[in-house]
Image 1 (cartoon, rainbow, N blue to C red):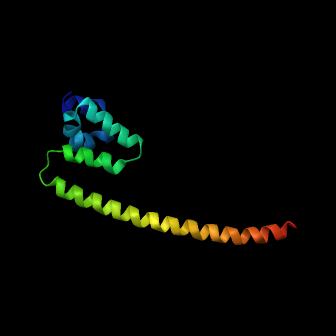
Image 2 (cartoon, helix red, strand yellow; image 1 turned 45 degrees about the horizontal axis):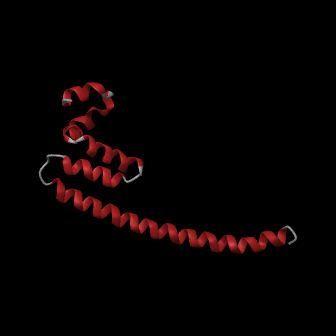
Image 3 (tube, rainbow, N blue to C red; image 1 turned 180 degrees about the vertical axis):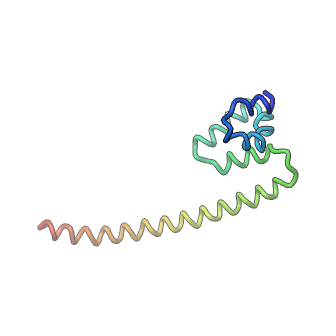
Length: 107
């Protein structure tokens, strides 16, 4: 498929994506596209995005990509720690509230 054929098949709002990423997608083999789809379906969007960027012919993209991925992973780790702490706080509060609710219902 040519870039123009792909452009003709997508809605107008997707055409800028075709312009930017279409050449990389068209160059992928069926196995690579299947692997990309698997990443998307598994929610591994950072890895899927990285796969497309690495296939993009733009010079210098690898360094930018590596830095972006490192930043995303660092932010995700920090968010996971915050979520775990919030979960621990919620559990502690609910344990305390359980005592109150049991007393409220007469147990």
